Image (cartoon, rainbow, N blue to C red):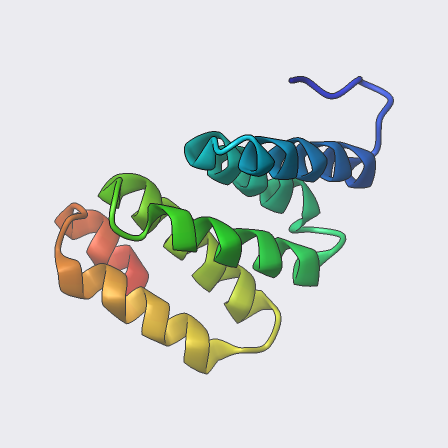
Length: 113
């Protein structure tokens, strides 16, 4: 699903989110999580609270399945939290990312800065 060139980020995010919920109703959990992350990316600049909700929903799906996607969504959620004035929660997520050691040393060093 692509958004039209003249479509706003909000409209695209709402379409991704609606598609995600349709996938969830159909029992397609991974497609739901993928589209809810896309919605979160579209929300993140103009509607950060909605982005947090989307990223948090995706984490529940990816928690015990795909570690690289789980780490990516955790990173996006931590970055969103730090820009919204919740550095404590963001540092917990960053600490978990460093603690599992699945990332390269360079990425872990960047997280610690």
